[in-house]
Image (cartoon, rainbow, N blue to C red; front, side, top):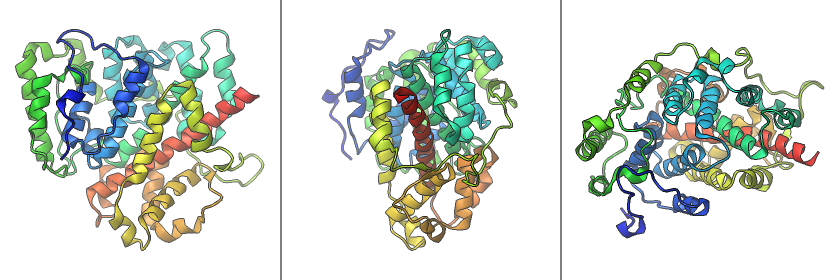
Length: 451
């Protein structure tokens, strides 16, 4: 195991003082530093520090630590670093996106984070209580979540052209990335059973740590970091017992450093954190709840034309546009797409009698095909040849109707494969769906800019 020497990291700021933000270029450089041998334990602590709990999502993604590292950096930048949108709006947009799929897990996380960054509690009563500017995102949120091929430049124009409460291009791009990210993340949450379980493969829940949600990773302190560096580096991610041991050890270190009273959340927030997970109705955050996915088919003149990647692709068009309007998010998204493409699960492909790259491309292109995106250089007969019917059914459900998933479906599908391989499939679903929504939204923005 290769560890970065301590001298490469800046010293932590004094306790009790706010973390000084680096200039934007330095921030991205620091986050983009590659560390392929980073231990999953340290990645879990990074997730813990920025969110106040060891999330079920991070535990599942921990089976693929290189991807988890990239995911955490992108999401941290999206939610917590300098950007066009205020912090409370970012978390509220995440709530709106997750509510489209009735994902209580993500809604509860971001309701708490919304309040922690100073969000107005009245907004949590629903869309009728939020600013008009934010409420006008509901239409594009609905379309992107279920039928992204319907997004056109007229939707972009309506958000940008209204004089009062209008969006800037940079704000809109930030909002669109948030919406697409949390639609896709809802698919991952349901696909891996995080909505119903506590993230352990055996179904046991890990209790959330009561750490301050605003804690910066650099506030962990040298003693905590040194203790973590001496953790047993041979621990297996397949053991939830070991993850619990890590959780307890981190908790003990923080208690020793700050005292129990400092680490308690405000009483109103503690109560809200306990109660929010039991919310049954998310309809207050949803416009037109009956709107849902419909099979894309070019059957008549009313159907939109097929989206051909040769005409508008992420690499040639989307990346440069999003990076220009929301600095550096394109690099972080692109790194995440590349990381999921580099993951290896050879046994899955071997069982289907094909190469690993062929198997992954079949899953990716099948997901894009469900959203009307086609690749001229791909033989779609391979999808039926290499992907079993039960796997295709699983992929379509997780991608298009994630709220219909349950933990038993995750356990039943492909029993002969390891848990980590099932997580790999769900990561492919997450990233393919995210890119599909971004392609439609960014193409519509491009058409608006050139019209």
